[in-house]
Image (cartoon, rainbow, N blue to C red; front, side):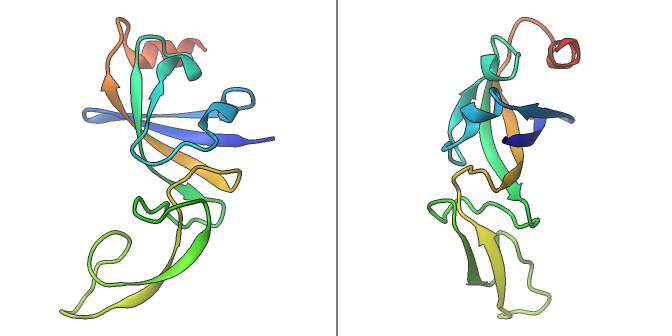
Length: 125
């Protein structure tokens, strides 16, 4: 059984919601940057964009790493590592950009608003 914690950002607020099968099955195979219809989680009229996530070990999903595999990358400044000194690099573990069964958290951003407030729709279901 697949279960995801969704963190949905809308302007300055964010909402958290947990989804299980069959709603969670609609996220399998999606990648960072793709859009998802709000009907999938009970928010009709809304459209969401996947911006990131975390796997079961706490490693972030990296947008430029294809697939759902876990790998160690040698990184400098940028995503997942902020160098304390100029030129410093370090090896960090990341997960690919595809959502799989190992993903625990998915970050979403509202792309298109519906007619009702999002907090009202998610609280009702």
